Image (cartoon, rainbow, N blue to C red; front, side):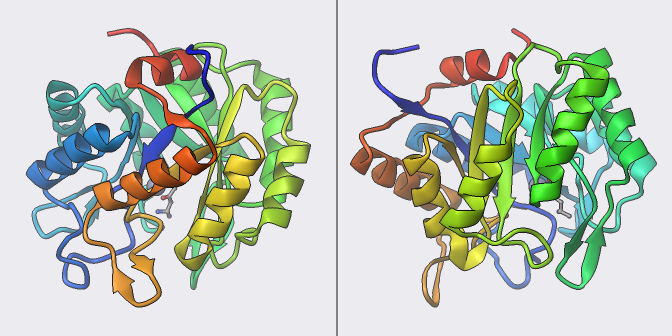
Length: 278
Ligand code: KMH
Ligand code: ZN
């Protein structure tokens, strides 16, 4: 690591909720995803959190598409490739476990069930345990996604029961401001960080929608890392649509610079997260 404070910038470019019809600039094809990832790496991102779409731009967890996506991102970028195991609220649990067959560097792992707008994002405890043990077996580094304070507590319980993740590092992402989860506020962030298990080695935060800037500033102020992207926010300011994911990464880099942080390189991110060398 360098002698200056560095910030891991994760980009979550697509998500599963927004439709291509609504937002044509959303990267939904493989070519668009690779182009976005390349631009975001150049702008300062070091990790990409990936959801993929089918030929009709609908969310999918198709195994071959996931493998092709991992290969294409590795071919064109040096980003740490994290596949979503959350998928969409409609994806069955057994299909979500199969995401690890695509052999990503990292996978998301949400620590509990959350009301998700009008839907339910299902993560029953036995599923969380199965996915965690599978990530250990397959040598894939989990990013623990915490949508609520109760999930902070559940992480302690998981680590106590099954030990550390593959790679020995424990990285958390606070996903804040989901309707049904914790607030996207500095107070909620401080409470979550206060209760993180002592074995957590790094954490980032993202605020959904209009909470994006409050969460970003609170995260920098508490020494956390940042996640941005069109999965989480679609306007750059009130009523002004985001033009590209790189625009959001550039803004995070600029705000980080005000806090005297520099973006972490992809090599530094691999070390921070303990991902398998390739
Ligand atoms: N699309 C949400 C239902 C994850 O990627 O693991 C779940 C989600 C979390 O986005
Ligand atoms: Zn996601």
